[in-house]
Length: 131
Image (cartoon, rainbow, N blue to C red; front, side, top):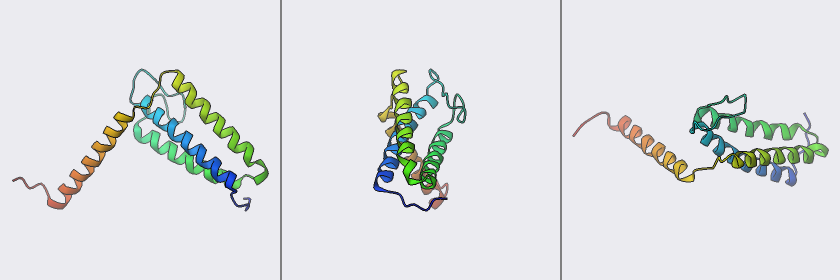
């Protein structure tokens, strides 16, 4: 492995990659929850679960970071450029197909998860007592 530290350009490239990847992940979650579309990524399969989508993108983010550290510094700009352009193209293609990020639905799902988590915690703390 190369021991060259990450430069400021590398850090910015990693941030941009992960921002674009987050958009791609949100689009993929829309695909996962909409039978009108199917996923083309063979790793995820045509109709992945939300868990599979999130796990895939988290692993991809870590892999990208670790790969960046292993690439010699003189080649990293090519690496960043390729990954940023590739992710942008995927997002643009998804958008042209009509895949939109439904922020209202995303917020609703997050709120339901938080409420469910609080309820489970309350049940664990107080048991199944009924008033």
